[in-house]
Image 1 (cartoon, rainbow, N blue to C red):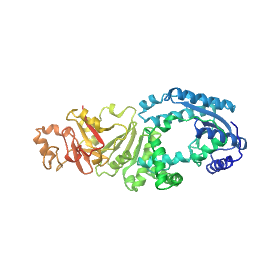
Image 2: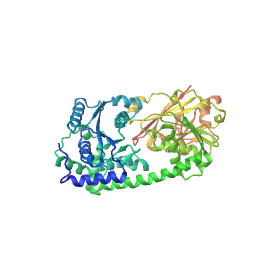
Image 3: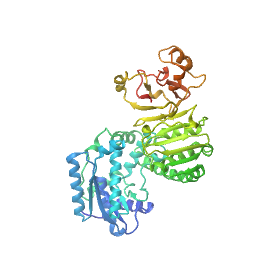
Image 4: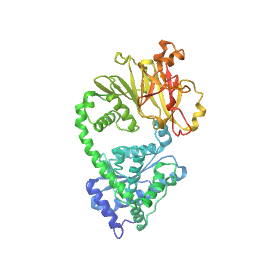
Length: 489
Protein backbone atom coordinates (compact mmCIF):
# COMPACT_ATOMS: atom_id res chain seq x y z
CA UNK A 1 0.00 0.00 0.00
CA UNK A 2 1.09 3.56 -0.59
CA UNK A 3 0.09 6.95 0.76
CA UNK A 4 -0.74 9.43 -1.98
CA UNK A 5 -2.70 12.69 -1.84
CA UNK A 6 -3.11 12.78 -5.63
CA UNK A 7 -6.17 12.26 -7.82
CA UNK A 8 -9.39 11.18 -6.13
CA UNK A 9 -7.72 11.50 -2.73
CA UNK A 10 -7.77 15.30 -2.77
CA UNK A 11 -11.53 15.51 -2.24
CA UNK A 12 -11.50 12.94 0.57
CA UNK A 13 -8.52 14.50 2.30
CA UNK A 14 -10.02 17.97 2.04
CA UNK A 15 -13.24 16.77 3.69
CA UNK A 16 -11.28 15.14 6.49
CA UNK A 17 -9.16 18.25 7.00
CA UNK A 18 -12.36 20.30 7.23
CA UNK A 19 -13.82 17.90 9.83
CA UNK A 20 -10.63 17.95 11.89
CA UNK A 21 -10.42 21.76 11.85
CA UNK A 22 -14.15 22.40 12.37
CA UNK A 23 -14.36 20.20 15.45
CA UNK A 24 -10.81 20.63 16.72
CA UNK A 25 -10.16 16.88 16.65
CA UNK A 26 -6.35 17.09 16.73
CA UNK A 27 -3.75 19.55 17.87
CA UNK A 28 -0.28 19.76 16.33
CA UNK A 29 2.07 17.08 17.65
CA UNK A 30 -0.63 14.92 19.23
CA UNK A 31 -0.31 11.16 19.61
CA UNK A 32 -3.27 9.25 18.17
CA UNK A 33 -4.28 5.64 18.73
CA UNK A 34 -6.07 4.44 15.60
CA UNK A 35 -8.70 1.72 16.10
CA UNK A 36 -8.35 -0.70 13.18
CA UNK A 37 -10.67 -3.66 12.66
CA UNK A 38 -9.32 -4.42 9.19
CA UNK A 39 -12.51 -3.34 7.41
CA UNK A 40 -12.63 -0.67 4.71
CA UNK A 41 -13.57 2.18 7.09
CA UNK A 42 -10.75 1.60 9.56
CA UNK A 43 -8.14 0.91 6.87
CA UNK A 44 -9.19 4.12 5.10
CA UNK A 45 -8.93 5.97 8.43
CA UNK A 46 -5.39 4.72 9.02
CA UNK A 47 -4.30 5.56 5.46
CA UNK A 48 -5.81 9.07 5.62
CA UNK A 49 -4.16 9.83 8.97
CA UNK A 50 -0.83 8.52 7.69
CA UNK A 51 -1.17 10.88 4.74
CA UNK A 52 -2.03 13.85 6.97
CA UNK A 53 0.46 12.97 9.71
CA UNK A 54 3.43 14.95 8.30
CA UNK A 55 1.46 18.20 7.90
CA UNK A 56 -0.27 17.78 11.29
CA UNK A 57 2.74 16.33 13.11
CA UNK A 58 0.67 13.37 14.30
CA UNK A 59 2.21 10.35 16.03
CA UNK A 60 0.18 7.22 15.32
CA UNK A 61 -0.31 3.82 16.90
CA UNK A 62 -2.70 0.98 15.97
CA UNK A 63 -5.09 -0.91 18.26
CA UNK A 64 -7.23 -3.99 17.53
CA UNK A 65 -9.47 -6.05 19.83
CA UNK A 66 -10.23 -9.72 19.25
CA UNK A 67 -13.81 -10.18 20.53
CA UNK A 68 -13.67 -13.95 20.80
CA UNK A 69 -16.84 -14.28 18.70
CA UNK A 70 -15.82 -15.37 15.19
CA UNK A 71 -13.21 -18.07 15.72
CA UNK A 72 -10.57 -18.42 12.99
CA UNK A 73 -11.94 -15.47 11.04
CA UNK A 74 -11.22 -13.20 14.00
CA UNK A 75 -7.74 -14.70 14.36
CA UNK A 76 -7.07 -13.77 10.72
CA UNK A 77 -8.35 -10.24 11.33
CA UNK A 78 -5.88 -9.78 14.18
CA UNK A 79 -2.97 -11.04 12.06
CA UNK A 80 -4.03 -8.76 9.20
CA UNK A 81 -3.99 -5.67 11.45
CA UNK A 82 -0.64 -6.65 12.99
CA UNK A 83 0.90 -7.06 9.53
CA UNK A 84 -0.62 -3.75 8.39
CA UNK A 85 0.88 -1.87 11.34
CA UNK A 86 4.25 -3.54 10.81
CA UNK A 87 4.17 -2.53 7.13
CA UNK A 88 3.90 1.12 8.14
CA UNK A 89 6.33 0.69 11.03
CA UNK A 90 3.69 1.67 13.58
CA UNK A 91 3.35 0.36 17.14
CA UNK A 92 0.46 -2.10 17.34
CA UNK A 93 -1.56 -3.29 20.33
CA UNK A 94 -3.67 -6.44 19.96
CA UNK A 95 -6.03 -7.35 22.77
CA UNK A 96 -8.63 -10.04 23.42
CA UNK A 97 -11.93 -10.07 25.31
CA UNK A 98 -14.60 -12.63 26.13
CA UNK A 99 -17.60 -10.60 24.92
CA UNK A 100 -20.14 -13.33 25.62
CA UNK A 101 -19.02 -13.42 29.24
CA UNK A 102 -19.27 -9.61 29.46
CA UNK A 103 -22.74 -9.80 27.94
CA UNK A 104 -23.94 -12.14 30.68
CA UNK A 105 -22.05 -10.41 33.47
CA UNK A 106 -23.42 -6.94 32.72
CA UNK A 107 -26.73 -8.06 31.15
CA UNK A 108 -26.08 -6.28 27.85
CA UNK A 109 -26.97 -7.14 24.29
CA UNK A 110 -24.09 -8.67 22.31
CA UNK A 111 -23.49 -5.49 20.27
CA UNK A 112 -23.32 -3.27 23.36
CA UNK A 113 -21.04 -5.72 25.18
CA UNK A 114 -18.66 -5.77 22.20
CA UNK A 115 -18.72 -1.98 21.97
CA UNK A 116 -18.00 -1.57 25.68
CA UNK A 117 -15.14 -4.07 25.49
CA UNK A 118 -13.59 -2.21 22.54
CA UNK A 119 -13.68 1.22 24.13
CA UNK A 120 -12.43 -0.10 27.48
CA UNK A 121 -9.48 -1.70 25.67
CA UNK A 122 -8.72 1.43 23.65
CA UNK A 123 -8.87 3.60 26.78
CA UNK A 124 -6.53 1.23 28.63
CA UNK A 125 -3.93 1.26 25.84
CA UNK A 126 -4.21 5.04 25.49
CA UNK A 127 -3.52 5.51 29.22
CA UNK A 128 -0.64 3.06 29.33
CA UNK A 129 1.11 4.42 26.24
CA UNK A 130 0.17 8.10 26.50
CA UNK A 131 -2.02 8.48 23.43
CA UNK A 132 -4.07 11.66 23.82
CA UNK A 133 -6.70 10.79 21.19
CA UNK A 134 -8.40 7.60 20.02
CA UNK A 135 -9.51 7.72 16.37
CA UNK A 136 -12.33 5.44 15.21
CA UNK A 137 -13.68 4.95 11.70
CA UNK A 138 -17.36 5.93 11.92
CA UNK A 139 -18.61 7.68 8.79
CA UNK A 140 -21.76 9.43 7.57
CA UNK A 141 -23.69 6.26 6.76
CA UNK A 142 -22.98 4.91 10.26
CA UNK A 143 -24.34 8.17 11.62
CA UNK A 144 -27.53 7.88 9.56
CA UNK A 145 -28.01 4.25 10.64
CA UNK A 146 -27.53 5.13 14.32
CA UNK A 147 -29.96 8.03 14.14
CA UNK A 148 -32.62 5.92 12.46
CA UNK A 149 -32.04 3.05 14.89
CA UNK A 150 -32.52 5.31 17.91
CA UNK A 151 -35.62 6.89 16.37
CA UNK A 152 -37.11 3.43 15.83
CA UNK A 153 -36.42 2.60 19.47
CA UNK A 154 -38.15 5.80 20.60
CA UNK A 155 -35.04 7.64 21.74
CA UNK A 156 -34.95 11.27 22.84
CA UNK A 157 -32.73 14.02 21.49
CA UNK A 158 -29.50 12.49 22.81
CA UNK A 159 -29.94 9.29 20.81
CA UNK A 160 -31.40 11.05 17.77
CA UNK A 161 -28.27 13.21 17.72
CA UNK A 162 -26.43 10.24 16.27
CA UNK A 163 -22.65 9.84 16.46
CA UNK A 164 -20.75 12.99 17.47
CA UNK A 165 -17.47 13.93 15.74
CA UNK A 166 -15.78 13.86 19.16
CA UNK A 167 -16.70 12.46 22.56
CA UNK A 168 -15.21 13.66 25.81
CA UNK A 169 -12.52 15.38 23.70
CA UNK A 170 -10.80 12.00 23.46
CA UNK A 171 -12.68 9.73 21.05
CA UNK A 172 -12.51 11.35 17.59
CA UNK A 173 -14.10 10.46 14.26
CA UNK A 174 -12.26 12.13 11.36
CA UNK A 175 -14.32 10.28 8.69
CA UNK A 176 -17.74 11.26 10.05
CA UNK A 177 -18.51 13.53 7.04
CA UNK A 178 -17.52 10.93 4.43
CA UNK A 179 -20.05 8.68 2.70
CA UNK A 180 -19.50 4.94 2.59
CA UNK A 181 -19.15 5.15 -1.19
CA UNK A 182 -16.41 7.80 -0.77
CA UNK A 183 -14.49 5.41 1.45
CA UNK A 184 -14.88 2.51 -0.95
CA UNK A 185 -13.67 4.65 -3.84
CA UNK A 186 -10.70 5.86 -1.77
CA UNK A 187 -9.77 2.29 -0.85
CA UNK A 188 -9.96 1.18 -4.48
CA UNK A 189 -8.07 4.23 -5.78
CA UNK A 190 -5.19 3.52 -3.41
CA UNK A 191 -5.16 -0.25 -3.85
CA UNK A 192 -5.73 -0.86 -0.16
CA UNK A 193 -6.27 -4.38 1.11
CA UNK A 194 -9.20 -4.84 3.51
CA UNK A 195 -11.08 -7.67 5.13
CA UNK A 196 -14.85 -8.09 5.47
CA UNK A 197 -16.82 -9.21 8.51
CA UNK A 198 -19.50 -11.71 7.53
CA UNK A 199 -21.59 -10.75 10.57
CA UNK A 200 -22.24 -7.36 8.93
CA UNK A 201 -24.57 -9.18 6.55
CA UNK A 202 -26.54 -11.04 9.21
CA UNK A 203 -30.11 -9.65 9.49
CA UNK A 204 -30.38 -10.77 13.13
CA UNK A 205 -28.88 -7.41 14.17
CA UNK A 206 -31.13 -4.35 13.96
CA UNK A 207 -28.36 -2.13 12.60
CA UNK A 208 -27.73 -4.59 9.77
CA UNK A 209 -31.42 -4.67 8.83
CA UNK A 210 -31.50 -0.89 8.78
CA UNK A 211 -28.41 -0.72 6.57
CA UNK A 212 -29.33 -3.58 4.22
CA UNK A 213 -33.12 -3.22 4.02
CA UNK A 214 -34.66 -0.07 5.47
CA UNK A 215 -32.29 2.64 4.25
CA UNK A 216 -32.19 1.33 0.66
CA UNK A 217 -36.03 1.26 0.66
CA UNK A 218 -36.21 4.82 1.98
CA UNK A 219 -33.66 5.98 -0.59
CA UNK A 220 -35.54 4.30 -3.43
CA UNK A 221 -39.11 5.26 -2.57
CA UNK A 222 -38.87 8.46 -0.50
CA UNK A 223 -35.60 10.37 -0.58
CA UNK A 224 -32.51 9.33 -2.57
CA UNK A 225 -30.40 11.45 -0.20
CA UNK A 226 -31.92 10.03 2.96
CA UNK A 227 -28.50 9.35 4.52
CA UNK A 228 -27.41 12.95 4.14
CA UNK A 229 -30.80 14.12 5.47
CA UNK A 230 -30.52 11.91 8.57
CA UNK A 231 -26.94 13.01 9.17
CA UNK A 232 -28.00 16.66 8.93
CA UNK A 233 -30.92 16.05 11.30
CA UNK A 234 -28.55 14.35 13.75
CA UNK A 235 -26.09 17.23 13.58
CA UNK A 236 -28.76 19.88 14.25
CA UNK A 237 -30.38 17.81 17.02
CA UNK A 238 -27.03 17.17 18.70
CA UNK A 239 -26.09 20.86 18.78
CA UNK A 240 -29.50 21.83 20.18
CA UNK A 241 -29.30 19.05 22.75
CA UNK A 242 -25.88 20.30 23.88
CA UNK A 243 -27.37 23.77 24.33
CA UNK A 244 -30.30 22.42 26.36
CA UNK A 245 -27.91 20.41 28.51
CA UNK A 246 -26.02 23.61 29.33
CA UNK A 247 -29.32 25.12 30.53
CA UNK A 248 -29.93 22.07 32.72
CA UNK A 249 -26.89 22.68 34.94
CA UNK A 250 -28.28 25.69 36.87
CA UNK A 251 -31.70 23.98 37.14
CA UNK A 252 -30.12 20.94 38.78
CA UNK A 253 -28.08 23.13 41.11
CA UNK A 254 -31.24 24.96 42.18
CA UNK A 255 -33.14 21.70 42.83
CA UNK A 256 -30.30 19.86 44.61
CA UNK A 257 -30.58 19.87 48.41
CA UNK A 258 -27.73 17.45 49.13
CA UNK A 259 -25.23 15.42 47.14
CA UNK A 260 -22.76 12.65 47.98
CA UNK A 261 -21.05 9.84 46.07
CA UNK A 262 -23.99 7.51 46.71
CA UNK A 263 -27.05 9.75 46.93
CA UNK A 264 -28.63 12.91 45.62
CA UNK A 265 -31.57 14.73 47.22
CA UNK A 266 -33.80 16.97 45.10
CA UNK A 267 -36.48 19.45 46.13
CA UNK A 268 -39.90 18.27 44.99
CA UNK A 269 -41.22 21.84 45.01
CA UNK A 270 -38.41 23.06 42.74
CA UNK A 271 -38.78 20.09 40.39
CA UNK A 272 -42.56 20.49 40.23
CA UNK A 273 -42.21 24.14 39.14
CA UNK A 274 -40.16 23.16 36.07
CA UNK A 275 -41.43 22.43 32.57
CA UNK A 276 -41.76 18.62 32.03
CA UNK A 277 -38.90 18.72 29.50
CA UNK A 278 -36.65 20.36 32.09
CA UNK A 279 -37.81 17.88 34.75
CA UNK A 280 -36.75 14.96 32.56
CA UNK A 281 -33.35 16.49 31.90
CA UNK A 282 -32.71 17.21 35.58
CA UNK A 283 -33.68 13.64 36.49
CA UNK A 284 -31.49 12.16 33.73
CA UNK A 285 -28.54 14.28 34.85
CA UNK A 286 -29.11 13.21 38.47
CA UNK A 287 -29.03 9.53 37.52
CA UNK A 288 -25.91 10.04 35.41
CA UNK A 289 -24.14 11.75 38.31
CA UNK A 290 -24.65 8.65 40.46
CA UNK A 291 -24.27 5.91 37.83
CA UNK A 292 -21.54 7.56 35.79
CA UNK A 293 -23.56 6.85 32.64
CA UNK A 294 -27.13 6.33 31.46
CA UNK A 295 -26.77 2.81 30.11
CA UNK A 296 -29.90 0.71 30.67
CA UNK A 297 -31.86 3.82 31.68
CA UNK A 298 -34.76 4.02 29.22
CA UNK A 299 -37.45 6.63 28.66
CA UNK A 300 -39.95 4.66 30.75
CA UNK A 301 -37.55 4.68 33.71
CA UNK A 302 -37.45 8.48 33.60
CA UNK A 303 -41.25 8.59 33.28
CA UNK A 304 -41.59 6.34 36.32
CA UNK A 305 -39.48 8.72 38.40
CA UNK A 306 -41.37 11.71 36.98
CA UNK A 307 -44.62 10.06 38.08
CA UNK A 308 -43.29 10.07 41.64
CA UNK A 309 -42.58 13.80 41.40
CA UNK A 310 -45.98 14.73 39.97
CA UNK A 311 -47.99 12.34 42.13
CA UNK A 312 -50.27 13.93 44.69
CA UNK A 313 -49.19 11.20 47.09
CA UNK A 314 -46.33 12.30 49.33
CA UNK A 315 -44.67 8.87 49.46
CA UNK A 316 -43.47 6.37 46.88
CA UNK A 317 -40.51 4.41 45.58
CA UNK A 318 -39.09 3.26 42.25
CA UNK A 319 -36.21 0.82 41.66
CA UNK A 320 -34.14 1.29 38.50
CA UNK A 321 -31.36 -0.76 36.85
CA UNK A 322 -27.86 -0.90 38.36
CA UNK A 323 -29.05 -0.63 41.98
CA UNK A 324 -30.56 2.83 41.68
CA UNK A 325 -33.45 3.49 44.10
CA UNK A 326 -35.61 6.60 43.98
CA UNK A 327 -37.72 7.41 47.06
CA UNK A 328 -40.34 10.14 47.21
CA UNK A 329 -41.05 11.96 50.47
CA UNK A 330 -43.48 14.87 50.86
CA UNK A 331 -40.81 17.53 50.27
CA UNK A 332 -37.94 15.73 48.61
CA UNK A 333 -36.84 13.07 46.13
CA UNK A 334 -33.90 10.91 47.19
CA UNK A 335 -31.93 9.16 44.44
CA UNK A 336 -29.50 6.64 45.91
CA UNK A 337 -27.04 4.02 44.73
CA UNK A 338 -27.28 0.81 46.75
CA UNK A 339 -24.12 -1.16 47.51
CA UNK A 340 -25.89 -4.48 46.94
CA UNK A 341 -28.58 -5.65 44.50
CA UNK A 342 -31.92 -4.17 45.54
CA UNK A 343 -33.69 -7.50 45.54
CA UNK A 344 -31.19 -8.76 48.13
CA UNK A 345 -31.85 -5.90 50.53
CA UNK A 346 -33.97 -6.54 53.57
CA UNK A 347 -37.21 -4.59 53.25
CA UNK A 348 -37.20 -1.42 55.24
CA UNK A 349 -40.27 0.05 56.89
CA UNK A 350 -39.55 3.70 57.66
CA UNK A 351 -42.37 5.37 59.51
CA UNK A 352 -42.87 7.80 56.65
CA UNK A 353 -43.80 4.97 54.26
CA UNK A 354 -46.23 3.02 56.46
CA UNK A 355 -49.85 3.28 55.37
CA UNK A 356 -50.62 4.50 51.86
CA UNK A 357 -47.99 3.66 49.27
CA UNK A 358 -47.56 4.22 45.55
CA UNK A 359 -44.78 2.89 43.30
CA UNK A 360 -44.14 3.46 39.61
CA UNK A 361 -43.34 0.51 37.32
CA UNK A 362 -41.41 1.34 34.12
CA UNK A 363 -41.86 -0.83 31.06
CA UNK A 364 -39.34 -3.71 31.04
CA UNK A 365 -37.08 -3.42 28.00
CA UNK A 366 -34.49 -6.20 28.15
CA UNK A 367 -34.45 -7.13 31.81
CA UNK A 368 -36.62 -7.79 34.86
CA UNK A 369 -38.07 -4.77 36.65
CA UNK A 370 -38.25 -5.37 40.41
CA UNK A 371 -40.33 -3.19 42.74
CA UNK A 372 -39.63 -3.63 46.45
CA UNK A 373 -42.72 -3.28 48.68
CA UNK A 374 -41.47 -2.81 52.25
CA UNK A 375 -45.01 -2.14 53.53
CA UNK A 376 -46.06 -5.74 52.83
CA UNK A 377 -42.61 -7.29 53.09
CA UNK A 378 -42.58 -8.38 49.50
CA UNK A 379 -41.84 -7.33 45.95
CA UNK A 380 -43.27 -7.40 42.45
CA UNK A 381 -41.26 -8.50 39.43
CA UNK A 382 -42.12 -7.80 35.80
CA UNK A 383 -40.49 -8.93 32.58
CA UNK A 384 -41.36 -9.22 28.92
CA UNK A 385 -41.71 -12.74 27.57
CA UNK A 386 -42.49 -14.16 24.17
CA UNK A 387 -46.04 -15.29 23.46
CA UNK A 388 -44.87 -18.89 23.00
CA UNK A 389 -43.60 -18.98 26.60
CA UNK A 390 -47.05 -18.36 28.08
CA UNK A 391 -48.52 -21.88 27.82
CA UNK A 392 -45.41 -23.36 29.47
CA UNK A 393 -45.72 -21.06 32.47
CA UNK A 394 -49.52 -20.82 32.71
CA UNK A 395 -49.63 -23.09 35.73
CA UNK A 396 -47.17 -20.98 37.73
CA UNK A 397 -49.77 -20.29 40.45
CA UNK A 398 -52.00 -17.48 41.63
CA UNK A 399 -49.06 -15.14 42.32
CA UNK A 400 -48.07 -15.04 38.63
CA UNK A 401 -50.08 -13.28 35.95
CA UNK A 402 -49.75 -12.44 32.24
CA UNK A 403 -50.83 -9.19 30.62
CA UNK A 404 -51.33 -7.94 27.08
CA UNK A 405 -48.50 -5.40 27.08
CA UNK A 406 -49.98 -3.32 24.27
CA UNK A 407 -53.13 -2.77 26.34
CA UNK A 408 -51.16 -1.14 29.17
CA UNK A 409 -50.19 2.47 29.88
CA UNK A 410 -46.68 2.85 31.31
CA UNK A 411 -45.48 3.56 33.86
CA UNK A 412 -47.83 1.24 35.71
CA UNK A 413 -48.67 2.10 39.31
CA UNK A 414 -48.58 -0.22 42.33
CA UNK A 415 -50.49 0.97 45.38
CA UNK A 416 -52.51 -0.16 48.36
CA UNK A 417 -56.29 -0.66 48.43
CA UNK A 418 -58.33 2.51 48.86
CA UNK A 419 -62.05 3.04 49.57
CA UNK A 420 -64.23 2.75 46.48
CA UNK A 421 -61.68 0.84 44.34
CA UNK A 422 -63.39 -1.23 41.64
CA UNK A 423 -62.27 -3.61 38.90
CA UNK A 424 -63.73 -6.15 36.49
CA UNK A 425 -62.46 -9.56 37.67
CA UNK A 426 -61.59 -11.98 34.88
CA UNK A 427 -64.31 -14.61 34.56
CA UNK A 428 -67.11 -12.48 35.98
CA UNK A 429 -69.73 -10.22 34.43
CA UNK A 430 -69.44 -6.53 35.27
CA UNK A 431 -67.31 -4.63 37.76
CA UNK A 432 -67.33 -4.94 41.53
CA UNK A 433 -65.61 -3.31 44.46
CA UNK A 434 -62.28 -4.84 45.39
CA UNK A 435 -63.53 -4.92 48.99
CA UNK A 436 -66.51 -7.08 47.89
CA UNK A 437 -64.19 -9.30 45.83
CA UNK A 438 -62.08 -10.03 48.94
CA UNK A 439 -65.23 -10.94 50.87
CA UNK A 440 -66.43 -13.25 48.08
CA UNK A 441 -63.02 -14.94 47.99
CA UNK A 442 -63.18 -15.38 51.80
CA UNK A 443 -59.90 -13.54 52.32
CA UNK A 444 -59.57 -12.52 55.98
CA UNK A 445 -59.62 -8.79 56.68
CA UNK A 446 -56.13 -8.87 58.23
CA UNK A 447 -54.68 -10.53 55.09
CA UNK A 448 -56.12 -8.14 52.49
CA UNK A 449 -53.28 -5.62 52.79
CA UNK A 450 -50.92 -8.32 51.51
CA UNK A 451 -52.38 -8.00 48.01
CA UNK A 452 -51.35 -4.72 46.32
CA UNK A 453 -53.20 -3.29 43.33
CA UNK A 454 -51.62 -2.79 39.91
CA UNK A 455 -53.00 0.09 37.83
CA UNK A 456 -52.67 1.03 34.17
CA UNK A 457 -53.58 4.68 33.94
CA UNK A 458 -56.44 5.01 36.43
CA UNK A 459 -57.75 1.46 35.97
CA UNK A 460 -56.98 -1.46 38.25
CA UNK A 461 -55.71 -4.33 36.09
CA UNK A 462 -54.58 -6.80 38.76
CA UNK A 463 -55.31 -7.49 42.38
CA UNK A 464 -51.84 -8.96 42.74
CA UNK A 465 -51.87 -12.54 43.94
CA UNK A 466 -55.63 -12.84 43.35
CA UNK A 467 -57.29 -11.90 40.05
CA UNK A 468 -56.62 -10.20 36.71
CA UNK A 469 -58.92 -7.53 35.27
CA UNK A 470 -60.71 -8.33 32.00
CA UNK A 471 -59.08 -5.41 30.14
CA UNK A 472 -55.51 -6.70 30.55
CA UNK A 473 -56.11 -10.34 29.59
CA UNK A 474 -54.36 -12.07 26.71
CA UNK A 475 -56.39 -12.34 23.51
CA UNK A 476 -55.93 -13.70 20.00
CA UNK A 477 -54.63 -10.24 19.07
CA UNK A 478 -51.91 -10.22 21.74
CA UNK A 479 -48.39 -9.81 20.38
CA UNK A 480 -46.36 -8.73 23.44
CA UNK A 481 -46.73 -10.29 26.88
CA UNK A 482 -45.80 -8.88 30.29
CA UNK A 483 -45.27 -11.41 33.08
CA UNK A 484 -45.89 -10.19 36.62
CA UNK A 485 -45.16 -12.03 39.84
CA UNK A 486 -45.84 -11.16 43.48
CA UNK A 487 -43.26 -12.49 45.93
CA UNK A 488 -44.07 -12.32 49.65
CA UNK A 489 -41.71 -12.89 52.58
